[in-house]
Image 1: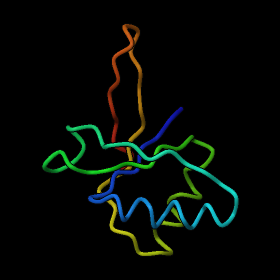
Image 2: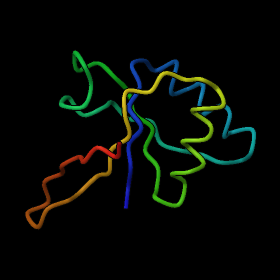
Image 3: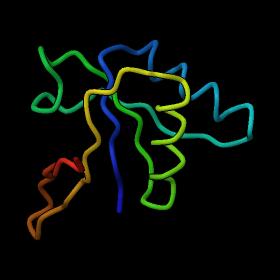
Amino acid sequence: MEYLAIFSSVNLVNQLKSRFKRDGRYFDMIRAPHGLSPGGCGFALRFSEEDLLLIKQAIEEQKIPLNGIYREAISVNGSKSYLPLE
């Protein structure tokens, strides 16, 4: 299962990615889906369920402003929807 952590800027995602890169861990950064980002110009860190706690802890430790975390759901016809975690 895939998750997206939504941020308001590319700099915030890169700050988080840099922290993990030092540990040899890599995560994808994508444009946030339009419906999940105020104004449609946010960015997201894509990660798997096994990294959920790690991502949440790093966001809290670094005090990075977060717009939300969403679980990606794929329907039978292949369309994606996003369910808020909190």
